[in-house]
Image (tube, rainbow over all chains, first blue to last red; front, side):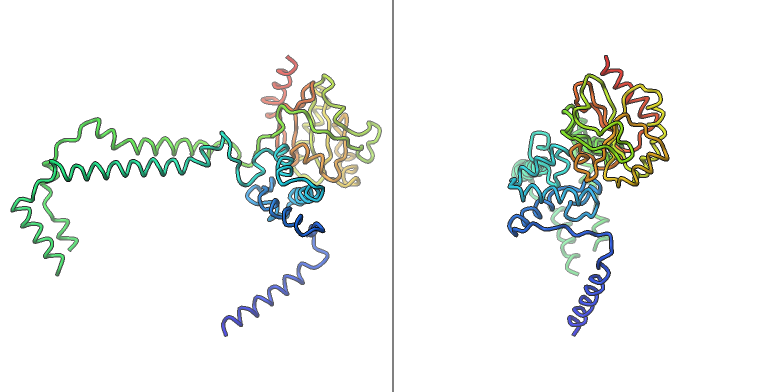
Length: 163
Length: 201
């Protein structure tokens, strides 16, 4: 019943949006490529390229004029037989690696890509060493048996815990 | 139960041997590390404008382009790659009538043109011919040469992402500096003009 109500509400919203986004608004939809396979490649590229104006969005998500132009360029080049790397190269030549939402792996970005893993490994190594030393210490001279007084205190504490 | 625990005798701690200075330093190491990291990240966070992206074209030749003249300013012809790198340092300014900040920097460009220190060329980015003609007609045209980039493709070849942008092109036709946003007298005096002096050697 509830699901039904939500479905109806969703349909109403969709209808309203459909009407609101009718002709006459400034939004101009992109012309997709005729070949669905090429169009799919172009869209995949759109999602990984940064909109240089909005910077936090991909050109697929942005309606900035520059993002529209960049989408058109990607389609043109894909449609013209360029490989995905050709298209990336075309844009990085002009905008630098910044235009790629995923920074490429190269010496300047090693710290970025491998830094977290390196910190994790270092942390794990330190933790491992500490635990091992603590264990070695517990097994060795540090491990004296409890004195009678200590045993008595421990028992009281443990008894307290039960109540 | 928790209260009982808190009252547990503490003599044991006092009986521990005193911590040596070297050992104490080792305990503090993580804090020093943290402070150093926080300082390094803080400096990066608080200085500079993250919206400003360095040009990928610095020290590269200007892109290939050939633009038709802006309507109403056909006399000087258009603006093309061949106009740059003829031994003379030049400023290339990318502007549009629809761009508010371009209007802000426009008087400075007029003054620069008047002074004649350096040739100033213009790329009219994604404007309609009508608007560009009216804008330049009303405010004045500071550009010796000017081209109309109607579809914005030349702008993209220059790596433009926000007008106005101003490029310093050296005598060999290489891009030596890029300024994004409104050009101020300060930018001109502190960065652009000294760079031009340097390039002129």
